[in-house]
Image (tube, rainbow, N blue to C red; front, side, top):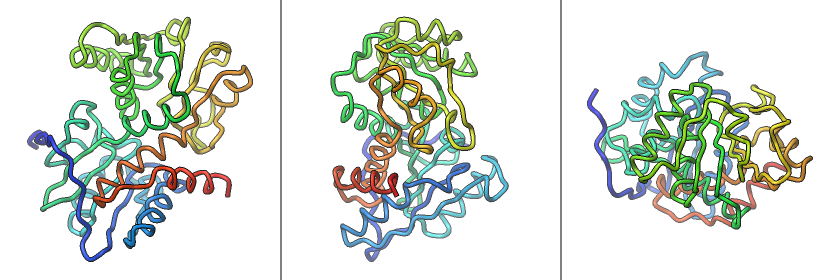
Length: 298
């Protein structure tokens, strides 16, 4: 299949007749709050939006089903799709075009169907950055350790580089993937600020901050992504998992007095970006964030 073309501009879709059909493809997504956020915000704009969960686990399939699912969404008139674990990179060759952001990050979390074409975007990096800066605007970015070099980790790595992180240490279960991402970041942003590190203890030693971007800690994958003794009180810790809302990592970090960023901030930030791509309408960030917090407390 040909490599998707690069899309330099990213206009939102134009839902027909005041309604839109969108969905989320991923594994174990039944508790996702993304549908509720999108549908509520659409209602504030007078738009009828239906958000469909397409759960690989519930269907008993794997990411190998992606070609069929993407084709079916086209045939059924979907406005767009959100894409989550484990499909953010596997979906790339199935698309016709990529935004500059998605191309650079090598991952897609939002697909917009427009004029018969499937266009891939990535709102993970901008969404994570929005949430992080809302919570820790003065965070020390001198030496940051990032756990996970997959789809979400790649997006966050790009965001951190753009934020001026002086040294970024990438740790992944597949060290070659971390090394490849580090090389790509250094190529794009210049210098040698990004480093692939195979030893998590070495990566965390002396770090000013820690970002966790793997599925570990989710309800179906409980536990810590690193030994608890590696956490230190002076470290800030950012999480991307939000089910459970207080993960084992956040509990351990807060017990030490670490400043933390919960996974909900990224969930809100990326949803705001995806909503605007799907609908062409500007989401109210304060309203979406407040709604998310209400949903978490319910």
